[in-house]
Length: 195
Image (cartoon, rainbow, N blue to C red; front, side, top):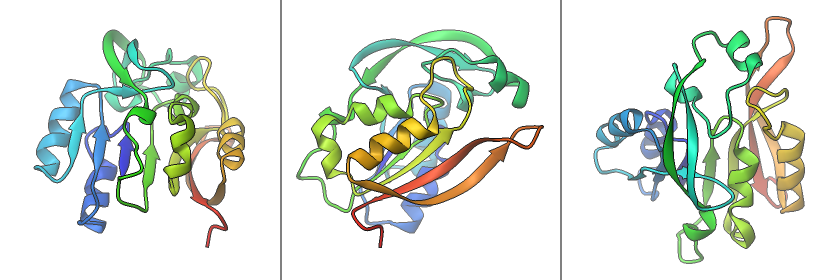
């Protein structure tokens, strides 16, 4: 399992308890949540202190007052309006890796990729390159309206995954705006028939 945007380990803890034999690799660029994640998992996962994107290198991370809302994209006005307390408090330079340099044929399967990166979901997926064929399941938070400046929206992520042989098989955790519009949801994709 690959947990991209692991934060304090909310998903990773569930995953490591539910699938104790699975190899778990977590990516979290911010030091404070990464320290909590590392302590929480106590050796049950490999924790990497990097962001993930379409290209390797370094990038500016926009740090939110609520650190799990931090992003490589600027935090948008709609995000702050709908989720008070998520305004930017500063920036830091972080290392960025591509999943194509992490995912390989010898990794035991099935392989699950979880992505929660505040608007950079499509860039993370593009960073897999041809290695996307090695991913069996994808669990990804997608937005239906722009919360981070320049982010890809759900339809673009869905189209990309469909074109790479992954079908949408579930939608969970829809978050609504004050006007009732759906802002974002967790989408689950499976390779092949989805059965």
